[in-house]
Length: 244
Image (cartoon, rainbow, N blue to C red; front, side, top):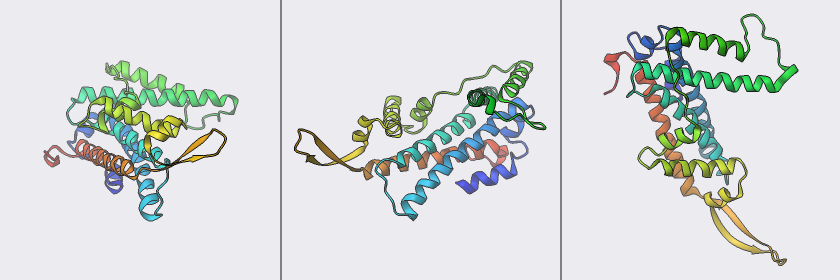
């Protein structure tokens, strides 16, 4: 999958592709220019999990869920941007919304740096400057941005496509809890072992990696990643080459 994204990124959209037609304006290019990096980030985390488990032979207790979540987030953003069922206008509006959110995150980062923020050189610009320029282009093009959904909503929508949204959101909160060191989620995602009595009125429970949960989550994120790459390829392919 990584190679497929690299190849289409190097080649760019084919003549007559939906992505090429959208890209006639800078605003129209954003779905493509935001989707490819998002998918690459997701696939990079998935590859890291693959190498950790299959090549290094390691099964972490909980750390793999951070890789699975990051893979799912990146690929979900790509799917939302390149959704083959939406119109060009909606796709352009979604791309604009994703770009605005990206700029705003960058602005927050730059403001936190304060005086340590390097002065832009050459054609470099601050996030605020780039956002102002982009919003001017949106107004000129008459595009009303569609806000990028939260990571929780995207995960629920694309990670468990056959399940109720509540099920996807529940699992997202479980693995997010582990990433943020929440004890409740540790027990929810682990296989519980024997109880250890320390003899002081305090008991501890041994936790083990739940390989069944890891397996199911891995299969689901691999499916999501495959669908994200399919959507990108379909978006960047000429109409006659697109899969039905």
